[in-house]
Length: 365
Ligand code: MRU
Image (tube, rainbow, N blue to C red; front, side):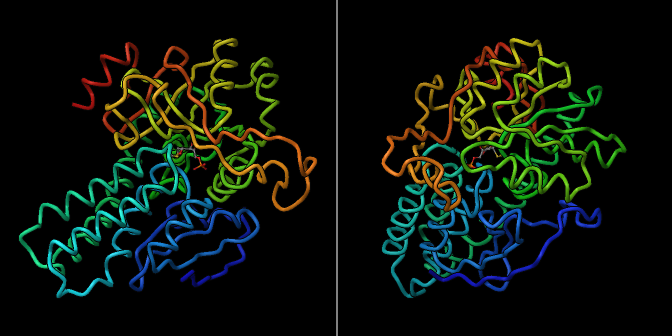
């Protein structure tokens, strides 16, 4: 599969291991190096990805996951897929290979629009150089993938600053899944305000939903918040209503995989239920996402394709029988939160408030 593993034992308690040092994905030694998130929280394993096929597999099996990180990974994957084409190929042949590789990577996961956004941007870069040689286009593709990574880090930092301005008077924040540094180039989206706050001396307390069935909240959010020295309390998903009823939660903030023109937001399964519970308890419910997560080609959340994943994730949770082997299973990986349940959407350009249909257009134009 073209993986090389670098294994580091990693105690997620040391304050010296801040998120600025945990790199979800980097370009090093002529390949993409990613943290294999399926191994967290037990081991911090970096794998080196050298082919488009290994990148496809890493995205599909959630070694790299989280909407912005998937986009970045796919951009590097596209370059990896065409870098072995001979420089002497005709430009037409080379551009054909770019399109085929992009379509292949785009078929890895359907919901996060960042994947398609990044691959389109890479294709446009290649097409804009159609009068150049294959060798020149290749170099431009690698530079573009690196630019996508760097831009994502800058956008997440801005989301952190705007999000901090919104959350700074609160103390206890609840989040779902992982929309932290490990879901992006760095900082994260929903967790970015927590990290910016930490830098400024604000000590938020975070409640993390464990996030069934693949436990991104327990395995990844708890891990990265502890690594950054943030006070985090883990709860099972079905405890959120009770915790909110007890008055412990000041605000909820989650990430997003795709936001429609009217503000309807797809995110990890369970987010919709959480938004309903927040509404019932008058707890503000924020979404944090960069412009690469907005899909203005669709009017509402009804048009967002929802990934359904393998039944084994529920029947054999982490390799252990957790249900009768032959039981029927429904395993949607995402749900859509209607915009009426969302208080505000924190972006790198500011916070969008209702009416979303109107204000999303203004801020993104
Ligand atoms: O299936 P995953 O782990 O890729 O799902 C991730 C999420 O749902 C995140 O909340 C979302 O991608 C935002 S990441 C900044």
